[in-house]
Length: 381
Image 1 (cartoon, rainbow, N blue to C red):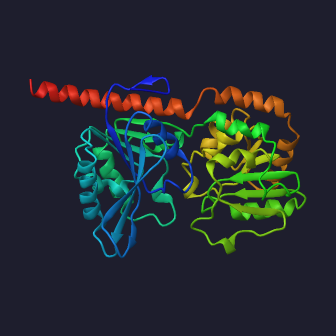
Image 2 (image 1 turned 30 degrees about the vertical axis):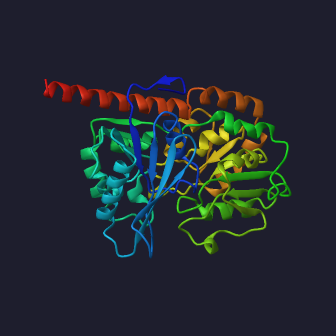
Image 3 (image 1 turned 90 degrees about the vertical axis):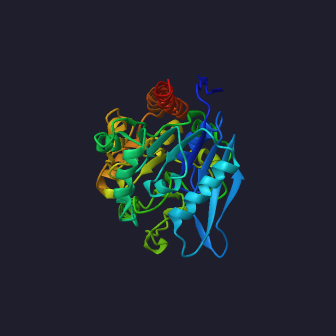
């Protein structure tokens, strides 16, 4: 089987267990799994929806050979036990004989107990235990997943450094980029209706607005420069919208589809990442860093470790901590030579892509399956 120029040696179906809703925000899971679905059947199992019906699984088809599985469970359910049985039935009904189990959260580990996967992958894209509302048992579940997994992928270098001693096969796969998609921002000729009348200069952000966003910093930089316009594109999650800073020069445009992001970013004079420096951001590797760069925008960020390394060190992103530093960094970014910046960014981005990341992951999975097959053959010889 061929995909993205690579040959897959092993045929398998991939069952992904994800705490992230497929249709919420297009990010790492979507980039990777749609690429796997070019050559494998992929089933993405989401968190349950509780109601008065079920237990049942609602399956809907997406791009390539990918299906999203939405569990519907009655209230007061033993979730792990019921989901284990539902997943086992799904595997039987769909004739999933050769399976790779792929986890984004350890909390769904028991759901796969009825399966006999050829390989178990933990794509650890965040330190979930540090997020607001994290289940207290998550750390113990992760230890259990480390004990079962064949491969652990991390969403960034910092997370790799935190996890590499916990498993014998940990690999860093930082946030990557679909350059062609975001470089559309360089040739946008029609702006979105809800942005086109906002004056310039515009400094924009796109992504989930939650406890990782430094809303105090946002309010302070807006106060320091009332002549600048701050455009916030993305859904507000896990924080009260009333707690957000509301100013005449801060514009909350809500969540947008992935396909429309270049049109918004293309209308900005600079892009920002005003992340809070707290536990929830300690290990993040923001996908928006390379996305902003591919869109040709100068970028300003708080000192997130995986932004400082390598983007800040390479002079691709301006790093600032205080409101005054942030404003000064924006002023510098607005005056920099864009042609030089874009050429430098393009040189870095040429070394990474979601295609390369997914191909490297697939090769590691192939190695695990081949090793296990050889061991089984030898045991029966």
